[in-house]
Length: 294
Ligand SMILES: C[S@@+](CC[C@H](N)C(=O)[O-])C[C@H]1O[C@@H](n2cnc3c(N)ncnc32)[C@H](O)[C@@H]1O
Image (cartoon, rainbow, N blue to C red; front, side):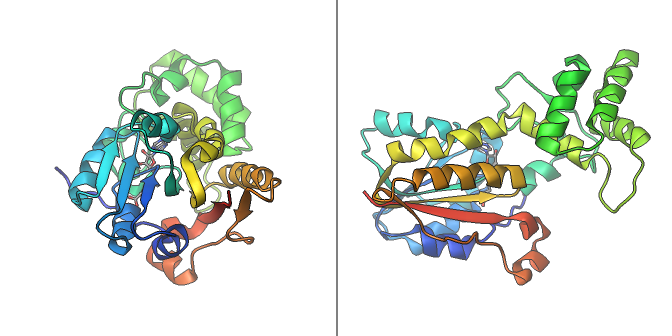
């Protein structure tokens, strides 16, 4: 198996703020390659347990190999399934849960997944290979107004209308099969004006749409009361301003019930410049942590 990498972001801070019981039960809702889980396990005792969830089967396989610890049990499921898994296993609740949202560097770097215009690959972009909707289906079969809508809503793309029209016109000529074909179509109507590739927002928007990422992000805070024990914490790491806005609002709403919930960090936590220097992916990261009081 090829060795891919993903450096866990704000891992030490998450370890310090998420662990409230060294022998407790924790959930990594977005296991990825297991980077955060490994750091958490390094601070946990032998009786502690982590359930790791990921929609990406390949990521789960790599995480098992990277972490190689019997305290970890993996589930190739969405984090929205956590309450059901706990109920099936008769587990009353856990001491902490982590959501490191978005995609991992490995997914971006693996050309066969189609997430990046830097690599030539099939226009796939699915986290879960069992799902039928792909980016290829969207660009080749959706009407221009629906494509425009996702480019605006998930990519905050100024030229959403122009790009959507160009995609639909190009797809009428010949099927758009690859990341490079799509990047070229976008580049033709939006010439490069800055360091950022003009297709960046289009690719981000398609990925979010393919995986219904915002649907899942909106659902995540709603499972907390079914999953967390009193005194337990949930950490949310986001990389997208819209995603952070959803989490910030949802946590604020939970905290209206002051007797039951409190924010662990009133001010959002961001990586230090040293971390950003070492890992440029950390630059847009924002961490919010909430605690269940009772
Ligand atoms: C940023 S990565 C996590 C990296 C991980 N923390 C590490 O240190 O290796 C996000 C992961 O979440 C997964 N993911 C995205 N949406 C998900 C969902 N609804 N349920 C479970 N996993 C999801 C992706 O497949 C990806 O592997």
